Length: 168
Image (cartoon, rainbow, N blue to C red; front, side, top):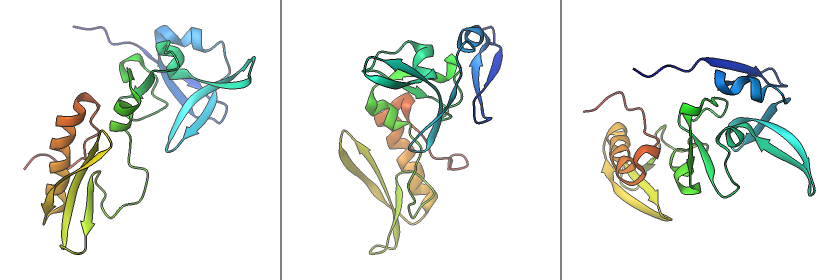
């Protein structure tokens, strides 16, 4: 059985807490951390001075030791959960696969929208810059499940699935 890593919290300047593994805690505590918001996710970060001026360094990138051309995905979507088991290096496209919905749509589900002309729910997925139509559905949850199936096919472990309350 794997040993479960102890979890420790680091207080950020705005009162929020970022969670890290105990093995990273003392090393990360040497710096003062604050929050940075990117689209709809909040991350732990710190500022550093460089030859080009002030730069923001994100905690999750530091933990994984990532170079500038590699991104980091928070598996659970929580930018303040910086446990190593929640972080994985990825491409920009893979990171987008696991992103949360951040704009208002006609459906609560990702990849689903109401189509007035057909009076049905349309399911779709975007992959490699192309929108793929998955069908029209009388039931919104069925459309969400169609998206989930396509997301698993195209995005694999990076798929951000809709919570449809189980399978039908």
